[in-house]
Every structure is written in structure tokens, then in C-alpha cells.
Amino acid sequence: MAGQGIKLITFDAYLTLFKPVGSVSLQYAEEAGKLGVQITKTAISQHYGPVYRNHLQQAPLYGRHLGMSTRSWWEKTIYEIFITAGAVKKDLDPVYNKLFNILWVRFTTAEGYTVFPDVPDTLAELKKRGFKMGVVSNTDDTLEFMLKDLNLTQYFDFILPSCVVGYDKPDPRIYKAALEIAGGNIRPDETLHVGDDIETDFHGPRNAGFRSTLLKRVYNDAVTEFVSEAKLSATEAAAAEISKQNASIPNSIASLNELCDILSDCQRQPSTPTPSATTTAPINTPSSTSTVSVPV
Image (tube, rainbow, N blue to C red; front, side, top):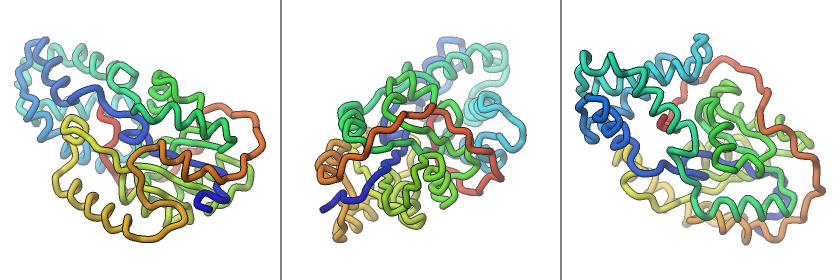
């Protein structure tokens, strides 16, 4: 039976539960233009990823170990994105605080994101069946507020952003932290992780003893604009390869709706009180792994 023994289901967040409303780089360019800063969507799209990754290398986990707030980390990062993309400093500097506030509010709330259609019904059904559920994501500490604004926190027993626990996926310690927060003496092999990244959401959890399935959604260009063609091709090739392998739980799915059928044979777990969605995991020494996350 495919889903026998699963007690805990953990999910990635960005591009698994929700996606941006339209092109992020276009919104950056449009909002800048309204304030007199001329920049193109193409320039933002080209420079966003490299600047973001460079800042994560310099200040991993959104600067938490350096004493930076998430907001200040993003403020510095977005400023450099604009400058590197060709914005004129004398035009940008006088209006940057206003521009940043607009982008910060938009991309830390439901204003900038939309939930995938298959998410609410699937989560509601799995919760009804008694599964424990959590979110494990390489992102900053605005995630809980964002999920609350998207009306999703009601489904989860815990939310675990990498910057709070101190490790990025695929570091095995972040998956171990998820088990500790979930409680109930749940074993790794009783846990299923679901997400869209082949390394952090498929191989990483398996290396930690979890079961995992890769979510292969069909995205448009606005969603994948910060992902390189090389990574898209590599992910597609890896997904095709793992789909050929036999597994008790399918190695890949195209929609979260499939989880309800896959896990239909699981015995319903006794209902337990749902703890606060906030995690109290301590901030640890940051790992060196960094991936593009929610594009504030």
C-alpha cells in the first residue's frame, strides 16, 4: 500500500504552495518607473538571481548570524539589484526608501502571491484525515506571516524557515529539526516531504531518511524567470529519470491532488491539538547552501 505508515507530511513553500502574481521583475521595473527610475524588466531579470545569491554567500540565512534583520538584508539586496541592473544612482537614492517599502509590503503579503488551485482542498483533506503537516522552506522569517495572509497556516502544525533553524535544505539537520518540532516520536521513514526542487525536496529528504516526492508543476515564464535554463533542463532530466524508478510512493507527481489518492490507504491518526504555527528552533551556525527563495 503506497502511503502506509506516513504520519507527517512536510511541504516546500515557494512554487509548491504559492507563486508570484505575474512577473516579479516587471513589477520591480514598473514601480521604479513610477518614481522616475528608468530600468527594464529584462535587466532586473538578468541581475536578480546573481545579486541575490551573492548576498546570501556574504550574509547567509538573510544575515541572521550577522545580527541583520530580514528587512535590512532585503533592503541592501534589492538596492544592489537595481544598481547592478543599471539604475542611475542619483535617480534611485532619493526615492529608494519609498520604492523598497512598496516592494517589501507587496512581496511579504498576499498582495504579491497567489495560492496554487490544488493547495487548499488537498491540505484540508489531509488535515481531516489526521496527518501532521508542516512547511520546511529555504526562506526568511516572513514566511509565517505570508502563509497566514494566504490563509494557509490553519493547515499546518509548524512552519520552519531555514533562517530560523539555522540550516538550509538539503542539510540533513533541517529535516531532523522538522521531526523534533513535529513531536510524537515520528520516525524519518514515517515522513513524506513534497516540493519542486530535485536536490532540496527530493534527494535531500531521502538522504535524511524521509520519503519524498517531486512536485512537477507546469510553470509559465513569469514563474521561472529567475531560474537558469541549465537548472530547468537538469531538473527536467532528473525528474524524467526518477519517474522510471519503482517506488512505494511515486517519485514525482504533477499536482498535490494526487497526494490524497497516494495516501488514501493510510490509517487516520488520532487528532491532537495543533500547536502554534511559529517555530522556536534556535538559530544555529549557518550552512553554506543557498538557493533562490521568495523574491521579495
